[in-house]
Length: 284
Image (tube, rainbow, N blue to C red; front, side):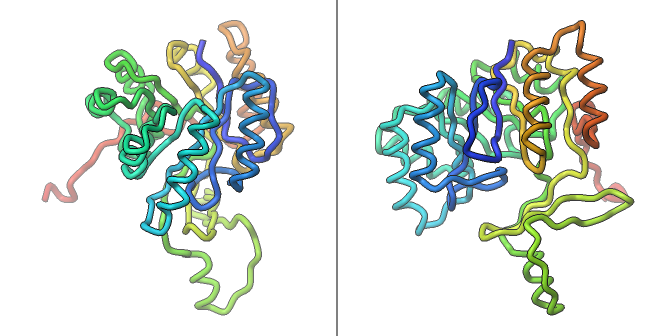
């Protein structure tokens, strides 16, 4: 069966999961929590003591002024011998090779990780993991699995990032109209659907209105290496219950667990059964 790894929302470990993906403040985006370097080191050591896996997501577009800290961090993570580093910016691949970093790399360019040909391109260059895009279908995920030697990470539960801007859209709006709002999460409403918006020092991210619930697909993806659960905007007690269900799902209880999750949250299947089709307007 697949390993269940989580995007945690605190520095508390969870014995039910198989591993974690965490972010570093200033070098990561679209995660429930960002660790300071010393906090990350402490958390990593605790996870390793629990014999669980730990990946660090450095999925921000890097700038020149990020590079000194990035290089320092890569060296320290190498000393800690974590399971892998998720990268978006190709600087991480190049720096890792120059510094002879031994930690595995995870190709995680969000909306670009959609096909096995590019997976194989990176595999031939020594990258052994890929974090697949959330916009591809179950059949496409299985097709990639059948045609690459890379280890796959597949988002299977939680809110999904839909839109990212480096501009502070909410903050700029509030300042323009001289409004005050100290909310950590705002919402935009369209056709009776609410979409969470997080605006911070790295920009603005709009998330899906529904939580992706792919527990029925776990049985179809039993050969996928890692299934990823996102804790963003979910109570700890509810998320812990979800982890247990994903860890213990089988043919006898899958419908029960699916109904329970759908009762707990506002859910859908995301793009797992919805192909992305590009149409030219008016056949132009």
